[in-house]
Image (tube, rainbow, N blue to C red; front, side, top):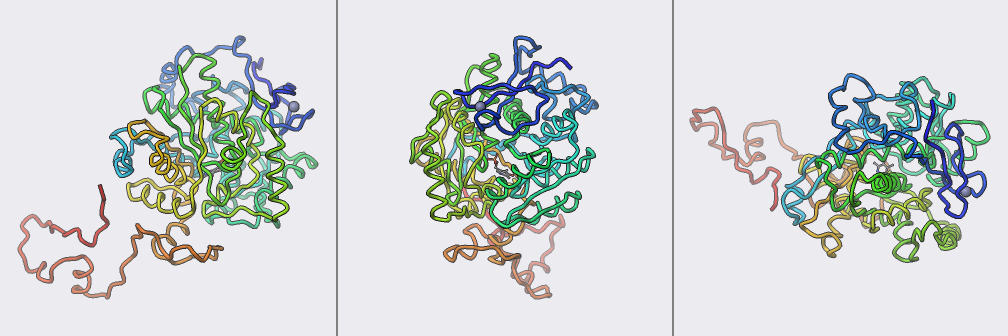
Length: 486
Ligand SMILES: *Cc1c(COP(=O)(O)O)cnc(C)c1O
Ligand SMILES: [Zn+2]
């Protein structure tokens, strides 16, 4: 296929370019990450975002069914026949007015982009479909990643469905059983190695290079191309109106980087008039971006960020033998590989960075759950961050906000059960100060196997059964049932 795509070094001082058919995860000349770029003037670019709606009528065609590939004109690096899709991206922007009201926001202004609805249960599928498409394009057979869980689940799923051998490296840090179970079930060769995620990724980058495995971590620029489409679907959910804020958790910083790239291109193509602002939320126990931006003052600086600052920070971490620690295992990362690209995203989208504690994350997760949206702890960092940014006035109560719920609630049921009951279902290193259960705990009630005890537990009077209830409907007092506060 004649392609308008090429790869380009993200370091403005270098700017080396490579063919789209090359398999690289960093610039050969300077070591910085690569971007996929397009020579839009030589291609066919849609005139309006609304024109993508025509694809809905051709949903029986897999590429038009996919929530990633129906936007393929905005990531045109592969011929249609190369695409590895399993119908990812059937995710929707959910209006969360009740949750928003609880946070003090104006009605109709809070939205949740529910990426847990993807085939493997996290947003990673958006990126994996694109990276597997490139892997097929270059004839790779074996694919590998380091993972805190969701990348390996997604890789294993796509490998199994598309005839690749999947190899996943997991560290000794926490991995939620929901995620591990997926990698095992989909038949990925799973290697557990000594060290945290950061060490694991360093190792797998090296191993992949030496053994010629195709690397699927977010250093792979094709992953980010697929993840851009989360921004397109949020626009679609708002009838192509740009929201005021996008809020996303920050781990390895691939997702926020993809969002920034999406808007950089939409602006360049004239498909939107402005970008929303971006809020990236770190966990306090894994807050490298927060430190780099808010304490060290790092900025994109026109493509020339001051790398000595981050090198100094990492040297200090090494010296202190620092390891990240947070209940939000998907963002338990202290050396985010996409840091430079994240600075660029903050620049394009006039972004801010905040950090939240594990307690704030778990309380926010319970609140999200209480309004009927399941997510894993890392995803709940968005709402915890939103609470903080509303409180300190960064985000206005009348502004329109979309939080990206990155992973499904069933990924990490241990965190949820522990929050509600205080019971740990598997051994996790928890700091001693952590409360036994959360403030919104919905504890199961122990009840004897007899009618009076059950009536008592339901808050019903003992004579309830004697009363004639003609409609067959018993009005229950709500005292002991979960409550909704306004
Ligand atoms: C991977 C992941 C993140 C972090 O995304 P990055 O692109 O690494 O910043 C957040 N939440 C969930 C559920 C994830 O799986
Ligand atoms: Zn370079």
